[in-house]
Image (cartoon, rainbow, N blue to C red; front, side, top):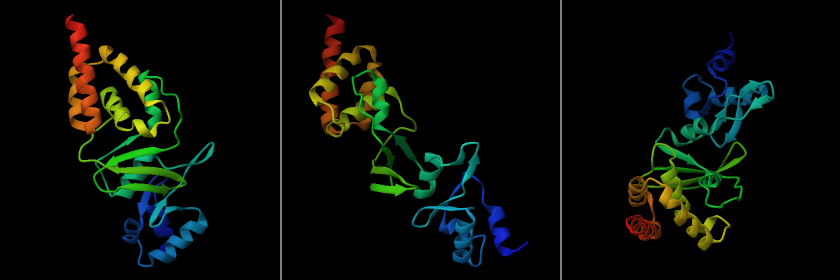
Length: 198
């Protein structure tokens, strides 16, 4: 078996790699990378980031978002979110957005990886997974980026509060909300509480 075949045998379909990951299996990593790209055993996603394509009945599958982002960030924690998730909250947002937001502690800015744009945002804290409460707070945090009428959206968010878990929502607003979001939820939850006790 040639050195290149030994190198190629280490690649796992569906896995993403940094150049440094691949260098451990080769004494001539740049030559082997070039050969792997020519042979279709690897695809280049961005500078220093590669993907071993996984074959499906529909052709080559793109890398999974979480695998790709984990490789790019060299691990976690991170949270993948999309403004499209707001559409399930029932607050009238209908726009479809072609972007994935990555909340993390390491990188900030927009990066094109494998032909898709990821919006990396550094946050001091974010949950392990998306919840309804986090999405409501995140929606208010990002109100100016939605392309919807902010006043209408806030009114509809307010209407939804009575059917939400107010204790969890209050905690989510305090933990993850911008100053504007914290004020909005404090006022809106106080109104809901006053209505409930009336």
